[in-house]
Image (tube, rainbow, N blue to C red; front, side):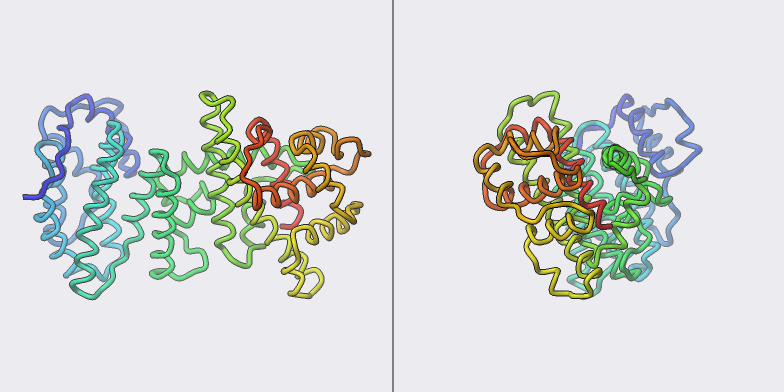
Length: 403
C-alpha cells in the first residue's frame, strides 16, 4: 500500500495549526487563541469547522485523510479512488472542485507550520498525480486553479520563488481557461499583479504581497514625483500590451526583495551581485519594452518599438527636456570604471569627471548601462549588491516616466 508517512501531529503542533484556520476564514475557530487535541478524532472535529460542504462522500474521505496524516500515513490509492468518484459526478463544477482543493489545504498548512516544507510539497504533488491520472483516463479537464494556487503559495512561503511563481502562473492559466481574460478576478491574478486587496486571497498570500508591495511603495515614495502604489499598479497594467510584462516585473521585484532578505548574512558575496544584475536585467527588459510602446503610441509609428535601448533612452530624454543625444561617453566611462560610473550617476547625477546632468537623464543613463551590462557581461560588480535598493529605485523611476 502506497503511503506518504508523516510524523504524527502532536498537541503542541496542533496549537500551531491555528494559522490554517485563519487561512480558511473560519471565525469561530480562528477566535480560539489556544487549543489542543490529544487524539486524531479531536483534530478532525476541529477541522470539520473549516471544511466547505460538498455533495457525495468526498468530505468523509477528506476527514479520513486528516486522520491518516496525523497518525500513520496517507493511503493515496484509496484517496484517489474516492476522488475519482467525486470528479466523475461533479468535476464539471469549478466551484465544487475549488472547494475540494480548499478542503485539502489544512494538511499542507499543518506540515508548513511544523517546518516540513518538503513533505508539504510532496503532499500536493501526490494530489495532482491523482488528478492528472483522472484527466488522462477520462479525456476531460477539471478546473485546477485553486489547487495549483495553494501548492504554489506553499512554495513561495517556503522560499522557493521560482517553483512557487511557476505554479501560481499555471493556476492563472487555468483561471483564464475557466473564466476568461485578460485578468480574471482570482487570487492567482491578484498574486501575480501585487493586488493585496483581493477579498478572496488567503491571509498568508496578502501578507506576502504586502511585504513585496511595501518595498515597491517605498521606492515610489522616493521618486522626484511620488506615485501611490495603487496608481503605479493600475498604470503599469494599462500600459502593457502584453500582461506577461507585468508578471515579469512582479517576479523581478520579488526576487530582488528576496535577495535583500539575505543581507544580514551575506555582506560581500560576489554571487549575490550576479543575482542582483539578473533580477535588474529582467526588470530593465520590462522598462525597455514599455518605453517602446510609449514611444510608438506617441509617434503613431509601430516601428519605433524596435529601436535599441540606446535609441529609446535618447528619445525618452528628449521628451523630458533632457540632453542625451549620445551615449558614447557613458559607454566609455563604464568600460573604464563601471563601479565609479554607477556611483557617480547615483550620488551626483553625472559621469565621472563630467558636468552634472538632470536626475531624469542620470537615471535613464544608468538604466541603459545596466541593461547593456546585464545582457553581455557576467562579471559581479560589488556596487550592484552594495547599492541594490538605490539602483532598483532608479530603474523604477525610469519606468514611472512612461506609464
